[in-house]
Length: 356
Picture 1: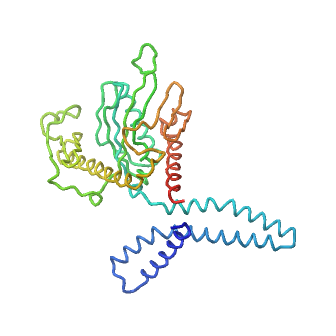
Picture 2: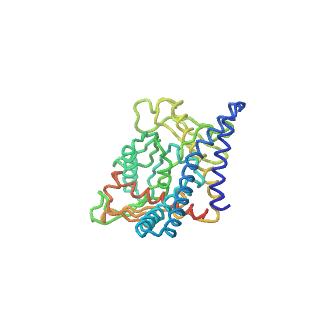
Picture 3: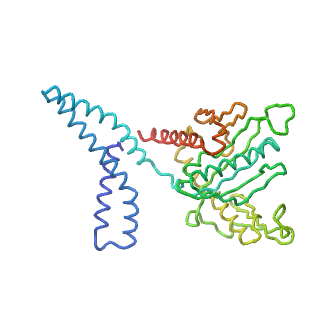
């Protein structure tokens, strides 16, 4: 189907939905369904109508320029036509982006998981730095950042940390953060001044509701045990910690941060639901994009995506060959958008290439 056919299909469907909703006999459930589809398509139809009007205006200006005998009027028509030609590509891109298949997870909240990788204590310290970077970034964007689970080292590093991030389009902006983040710097424990390389793994999962993913109780094995580590005197006296194993997938989730077994189970189920939803989403995405490899990567947490070089003060994202010499501001969350925005743009360009 050509782009023009796509445009006309959207305009026809919007007109049809308007007619259906104005029918006095429409059932309430049908009206709700029509209204939801109309709310999604109407902004696209408005962009398409504006594009068609701009094209018609350009054709009129060209005709006026060619048929006008007055040099001054002809020059004015030519200038206006050139201005319209400059505007059209941007309008066309906005329409095509609006027509792209939506990632239904984009508007969801996210679950962030950061784990220390290779590099011992230094990897754990870097994982803590990354976790703090996302926490500061969330604060700057007005999102709510809530730690669900954290396992710290004696030196202040993080073996593993899990948080929920709540706000507008959280997953859309953070989904390309999944993968292996590598750091090159001189550890505080290094006496010779040598640069070490270590890594941490980041996973960003869309938060799933019960309606998004159904979990059968018989597919779960739930174990309770005594919590260990910091947390007060209760930790070794009550079996408040919960471990949930999803038997079909083999996914295991443990929670022990809360004193209540019930709260730990609820948190563990929230993480399990998100992991299962992301697994299902990745399978759908892989099937849809089997004929290409996105330039921004697959979101696989085993894929090395970025290097943070402290001696040179630079951050390099390997998927789009982007290097910024503002490491401090990136780690402070202030300049993270300067990495995220190009990643989103690259993904949009790759998807646009599929329909043009």
